Amino acid sequence: MKTITIEALLRWAYCEELPKAETATVEIGTAVMGSSWDAVAQQGVLLCETVSDGRINSYGVVPVLAWYGQEPHEDAFAVHRAVGELASLDLDVPQGWAPLAGLGLSEEEQDEALRRAMPRLASQNDAGVWRLRGKPAELLRRHAILGGAPHWEAETPTARFVTVQGKPAWFRKVSQTIRGKVYWIEVDGYNKRSGRPYADAYRKTVLEPDPAQAAIDRAEYEVWHASLAYLAEVLSEPGLLTAHRVLPPSAPARPWEEEIVPLTA
View: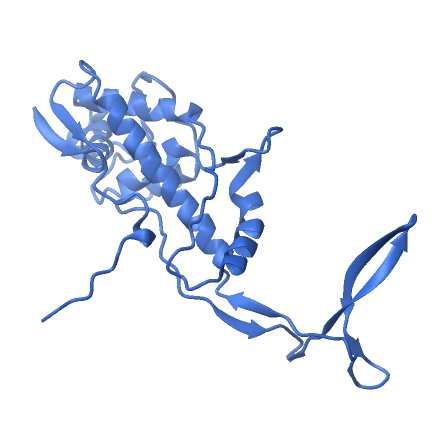
């Protein structure tokens, strides 16, 4: 049996074996849903001469003319079935999740970035648990075909003062009583009559680039990596593969936490 990493096995299945199947083949296992990554496949990311009508086959890839009609390896079918079953995989955001290491942010800045990022990358259930919205099966197929991993690198944000139409923006807080309860709200802190800020006005800063986007990108990377690790475990069960022995992902789980060792002469 050939020993192979899960990333290489996926690329072999979706780029070398499953493109052999004809467009009209009967689906095996979970159906491939039409999605954004289909369009990528249709644009010929395999860099091979495809069937003239350009239709994808039952496995979501464009059949390759040189292999058209040949039977894919049975291990490729097993991989495809296992990937399809990932659609039912739920990935919860762990307690204390902190994906913004290495960006030089204070704890307060990280908390604020995550507060804004969470509704865009996860849904909260009745128990208060955040569950990632990432689609594991789609992520694995996309990167099997395109290669590489989801983007996770980010520039170190810098703070700049908030402006309005190129002028400094000022803010202040005032109290407002509603039904006997006092609320503090933030309002414009610039006194237009006097042409100057109020005495209690303050300025605010924002971080650029927005670290919330880095949290979203890194969440997708973690979904991809966790799915790879889970798939490698599933495909390691005896009898599932006939010609391959699967190794865990070669990519690090959280590369932004890897210690950087300086080069020495």
